[in-house]
Image (cartoon, rainbow, N blue to C red; front, side, top):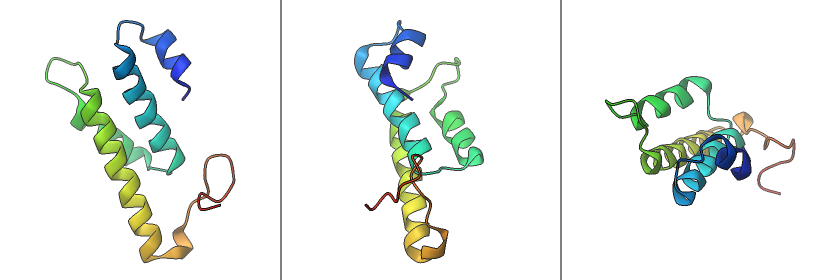
Length: 90
């Protein structure tokens, strides 16, 4: 998701927080994190008052990407293509 879209949709967030959220969403998309895992990330990064800890969201997205890469390394036949259709390693 483009950072500009996040900035437009969530102007009340600081630029650093907007960047963290956009980067986390990009990672989730780029590495093919499952919808189930994405939902889990959103829940874990959520706070009791309904707000989100965006630094935690980014950290969890990065962890999920590492899990995808580890699964691919263990079984190369599960390798996903990048969202643009190209091989991520190219």
